[in-house]
Image 1 (spheres, rainbow, N blue to C red):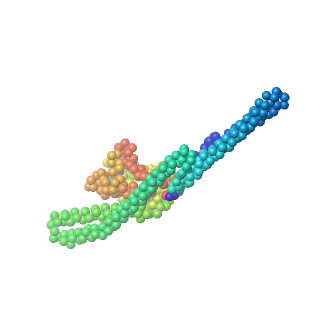
Image 2: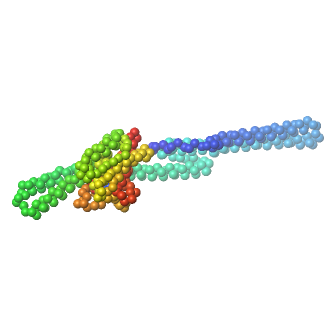
Image 3: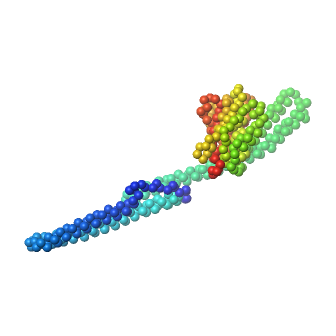
Length: 380
Ligand SMILES: Nc1ncnc2c1ncn2[C@@H]1O[C@H](COP(=O)(O)OP(=O)(O)OP(=O)(O)O)[C@@H](O)[C@H]1O
Ligand SMILES: [Mg+2]
């Protein structure tokens, strides 16, 4: 299984830069040289003493001392060589082996097992690291299976919403138009109550048509993938304002804005986003004429936009609920609407890799919505 390689390891600093093998070599050589020098000096001194014609017993002792020195020298040399071999085979080689295995895993091959069988400490360490690797891989596999399953069922749901809303349109249109025809053709033969019933039926059918159209829009985002391109967000705002021109004029609303950036996204969907938010800001107005301000500030690679109004505001306890589909806080006869606008906005923003939320910090004056979009030139 290949996963993205891990970032490169942190470089060691100071004396840590020197590998362990080099340390052994330096200290081993120093100890060897000191030992040989010591032996040479002692032997030179015994030779010098022998030249001074000592008594025969002293001469014999000197000879024995020389032999003892040679034996000790040979033994220590053998021990030194043995130690170097042990360090090389039992420490340095397994460390290099483990490092190589860890490097392969860090390079992205997470199926590569880690194992060294000596010395005991390294064998234990490698077995712990390998257990961690196996556990991470299994958790990753479960998570990716679940993500795949979620994607599939999401796709199915979206397909269902699309097909249902698309196929429902036709019979509904029929119900609405035939009920209207009934009223036109036989209106005079019907009494007042019958006409009222027909009026209710037509009204219900029209509302359902609105709901279905909104549901269709909702299920299209991310499904019928709109192309993304670099766009001036001021153009999106202008287009949204054009679509809302009548409402803005009727309510004497003023819409102001900051300098707006270029972003990467789908033109149609982002226009819809601006339009829904400004429509809400104007619809949920207080007694004062509506004032709406569109702001923007750069946060890393994203732009954070805001839409602030001076309307009735939203209590912070509803900050999550209002983004759910068909959730409204007011009766339809006070503020018309289907309750899909913000759910659609959130879906559009998330489709663009951003987030949309209600800013809770408005001191009870109006409502401020904030959302992020990738800046132009990013991956988009
Ligand atoms: N700017 C705002 N000020 C106050 N309340 C708001 C604002 N925007 C949204 N809301 C609240 O959030 C609810 C959900 O908004 P949403 O836009 O989803 O639905 P809607 O405007 O009622 O209907 P639709 O947009 O589908 O026509 C609204 O019914 C309203 O109660
Ligand atoms: Mg709305």
